[in-house]
Image 1 (tube, rainbow, N blue to C red):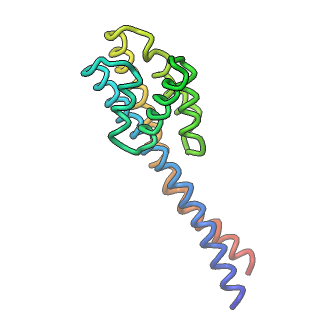
Image 2 (image 1 turned 120 degrees about the horizontal axis):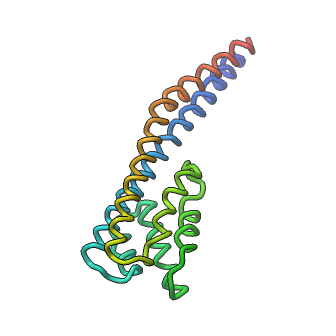
Image 3 (image 1 turned 30 degrees about the vertical axis):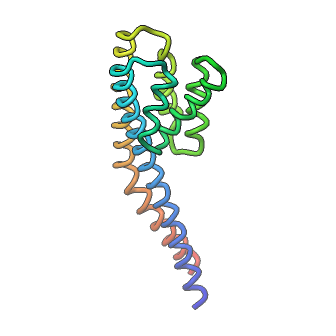
Length: 171
């Protein structure tokens, strides 16, 4: 009886590990989509209000408590604290907010692109960069969805399969 409980626990633990890997892939997709929505909102705020960046960051971050909006709040706080904006603020805030998430280095690099030009070019150039950024993010989201659709079901099934194999070997 004890052996059966141990084998079932083994199968269940491997299966849950596979499910957790699948949920990490799904979380990556949702984080990228959230950031994409924030970029669109930020572009609209810059386009409509034409105010200083810290004010726009604060206005945009008030709307939600998502990671992307928390990122904008941290960025605005950094600018207020230091008194000016530099490219490092964007990447440092990205790393701070998105550490321990399933985002890849390529995702972070794509997300960092916005920090390269924001606040350093004229209004029309901003809009062109935002359009380019939206394209890059959309491609990254599509890649993450393909990865999720291909590997997600496999991870959850293979976890239970490996658990069953390990259980059979223990019998």
